[in-house]
Image 1: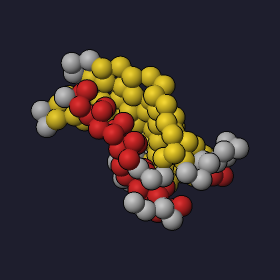
Image 2 (image 1 turned 60 degrees about the vertical axis):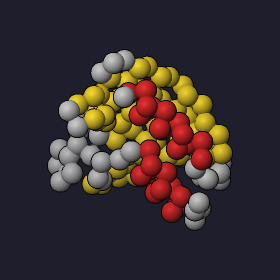
Image 3 (image 1 turned 135 degrees about the vertical axis):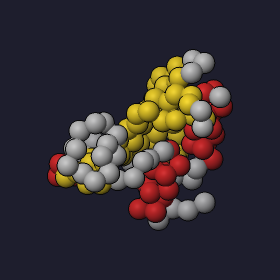
Image 4 (image 1 turned 90 degrees about the vertical axis):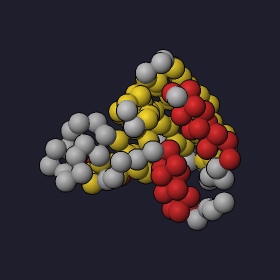
Length: 127
């Protein structure tokens, strides 16, 4: 189940038009949990680095923690979605979005498909 989930992430990156290349930095697969960290080069030269730690639960694979960090080629933050348990003042705690200028705002739970869709929309790229 974990292996299939992680393969699904790699499959999504392989066919998404916004991703020009990617490299799996770390991948750990257990019976009940898994971790993946990937660095992506995007079609416009930006970078996306993300990590997900997942666990098997009754309803299937659940993302316990994540971070999707999108930055320019010169390392300026564009957006970072994560669910680190800080920013308790936000109504969507623990889910939040970091923006340039150290701004933090509410965010819904994120996954690789949603992050790539947001980037595609921002860049005007579609399948």
